Image 1 (cartoon, rainbow, N blue to C red):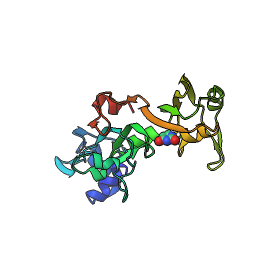
Image 2 (image 1 turned 45 degrees about the horizontal axis):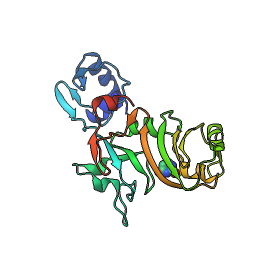
Image 3 (image 1 turned 30 degrees about the vertical axis):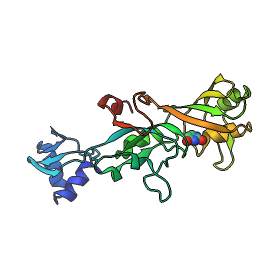
Image 4 (image 1 turned 90 degrees about the vertical axis):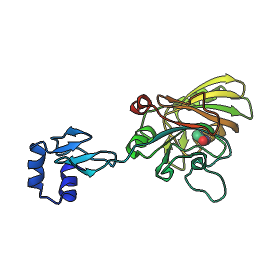
Length: 230
Ligand code: URA
């Protein structure tokens, strides 16, 4: 919500009074005088009027988790353990997953209560590369490299996948970089070549790489530097 609208609602003053309060430097956002009426206010912002708190500002939370196999990328599930069950943090129900992984896929998972931040990372048009290590049942056909780079038509979504980079590391092992996150995308891409994905591990999302010190099931808060990179 814009600051002027927020103030009018919260302090119950007219739009004209809001303009005056802001022009007189009586409104502080996150400890600094704010003179911009159209500034977007978020739940994480601390807002004061004449030194009195209008909004304390919720703490923004960002976690990196090493997702183990056999765990659902959801916050609730009646049958299986979820990634949230691995986390021992207050208010963990406020967290959501930025980029789900399948039940048996392992690797980098990010959880946050900041929707704008996670959208920047995961929206289909975001150009943040997601890097996966893939193991397959059968030998990887070198023709996959060209086909993945060209893009594949997915009839269900009626779209062609964005160019993806496949580097073959061994007869049944490869590293794949995607720039979007379609449903079961990696498995469907290899499926076109009748090759089953037997193991899938996400190494990185954009500039964020899974911390090698995190055991499967382990997690840690992101650093300020990591948060700022998205
Ligand atoms: N593609 C898949 O098929 N599964 C995942 O978990 C992630 C990408």
